[in-house]
Image 1 (cartoon, rainbow over the protein chains, first blue to last red):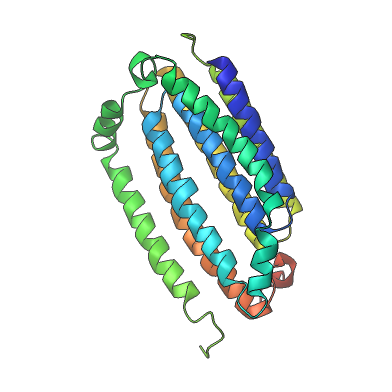
Image 2 (tube, rainbow over the protein chains, first blue to last red):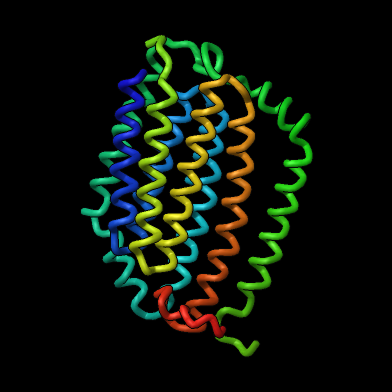
Length: 167
Length: 103
């Protein structure tokens, strides 16, 4: 299991290094998704499968979609089609595909290895987390919801009328 | 296969990822990349929390990660709205164009 951890850690570090060195935002986001998937696998290996699922769904799903959306919005104009052709040329898929292929092999190995789920053998149960989350940490959950509400209102207020209309 | 991952390894990985994100914030001048690097740093902090929670067998680490997740969502939404406004004002994503702080 330590070997699996080392492989996933290497994938995460390589992908993160690619993120901060790439020049084009879409390529960096592609590598960032791979890095987040590697970290999610590490969460699973550490005995937190629920957090691993949340990492994939929220980080690699929702937040990355926000980033991609903004990158696409910022590049309106007649050059968009030619630009996207340049972004998505076939060579760009190779490095992320290899890295995520390594992750997929690891995942298949873990799932087919006949092991018990890690949350049973070691780590913290999801039930324990949710009991604690809605018990002693209830105020923190409410504060987090207020924070999300403030983020929603702030993003709406800051981002309105960005398209050059008078305001 | 039954041995557990030592918490030190995960903490070292979190430190490396955090350092990479910090380097990204310091080196890059594109505000989109700065936001991406902030995400990397938040994620590394979450990894440290999960590793500590797994080390002590307590659920608090995972709960803290959930709060970090909510914080990251709010931060990204406001940050990307600011990116759109910056692009509207200056027609560029260079953060140095907005270093005067006069709106």
